[in-house]
Amino acid sequence: MRSRRGFTLIEVLVALAILAVALAAALRSATLAADGTLELRERLLATWVAQNRVAEYAARPLWPEVGTRAGNAEQGGVAFAWRETVTATPNPRFRRVEVAVYGPRAPERALATLVGFAARSD
Image: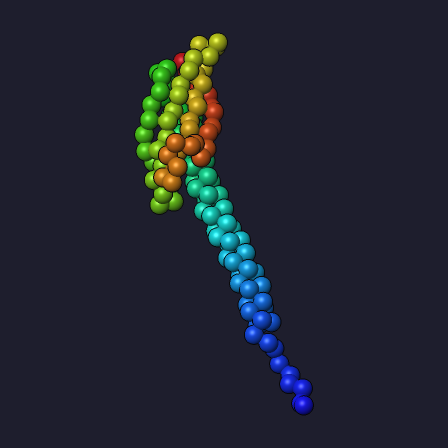
């Protein structure tokens, strides 16, 4: 009897199963990395929207009324919604401005929140 060299069907199936598990794990890892990159980009753009809202009070002599305002802004081709809450401070020459920015994928969760102050120039 001659000995035959090669793989049996069971050995080939086990090797394919191991390869399938490894490829599935690699695909899952790549998907998570892509999602993380997208969320990081959205957070960065949302932070810029919040900074723009606060910088507007420093650039122009706006004296905001106490209360809450909302609006929309576009940054980097992405549409964001913002909510601005203005509160009084113990010093009547300053107002506290808190800006929360919400993204298009999860409008109930703020991507960025920034607090600044507006000063009255008399």
